[in-house]
Image (cartoon, rainbow, N blue to C red; front, side):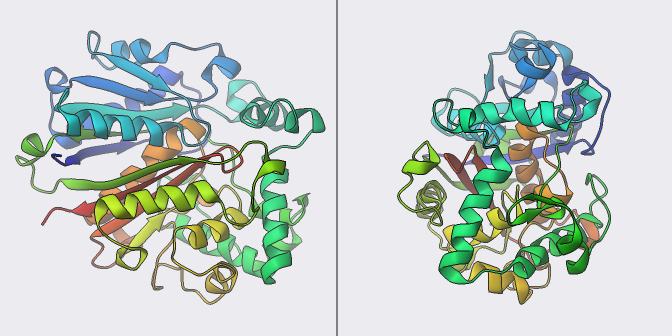
Length: 388
């Protein structure tokens, strides 16, 4: 099958915005098209991710609305919703549409507004977002996602001896990376003591273990192999995996294994014909510090139980053996839910093209993105490589 490539990328700053979803999306989509050097008439389709627009802003049927706003009225459009994995799924479908032949150029991205600028405070937004949890068993019990990932992480601590200090090192590392990212929601450093002294949210997570709700948009241009040949530095999409896990959480076979991530990673590695040791850097879904630890093990970077000690030893820092979240991750870069997946793809693209300045991973030619939705229920893993 012919290979798809990313040939253009655009992204807003993450943080509070007072713009509409259409206006915010345009601030990422139009720069992505300009970066690619494509005209509106070159774009065959628009795929977009948005999770909460219908609930929080009464704004649904976003495909044609966003297409109209960026001058693409007339092209086929599709809105995707898959909790935090929303725009990763949109990206997968854009890649498959290009690989299989119906389209040569697809604009794909995501947009979300989650901050109090929407008129909803944090408890109200948390209630809206927990609609991604199980409706029959989990929602009536009052569990939200800090509680879900707290349960997973506490079990990991019980089985492997993972410590709160090791979790804090994840936050410290990602905040340090965020200071190097001008588009990050939080561009400030922290230290282990500050993380451990922050208010308890859901045991073992404290406030500084948790990512923020953010507003923002991200977009990339996906092109067919023949079309991408005309660009100086196309970044090839060499593998995508997509898997789901058991819902509700009480029925999962093993709380520390995150099976959907392991299966999605296996699929992506097989398609890309690489292994975990071949990955130069990774953008992964660190909605909570414990989620990063579990993901580094699920992706095969470390054996089960080694994720915490690896973070503590600096093995995931920018100058470590496998840099994790050079962008700052969800923890510092921010988490506009529907935009997070393609934001990871933007970072992979710009890292591989050598465009990120002081957070550049040296000689980065192979990157991996890991994005999960719900209580590890949906995971997409994407491998991207420099064209050789």
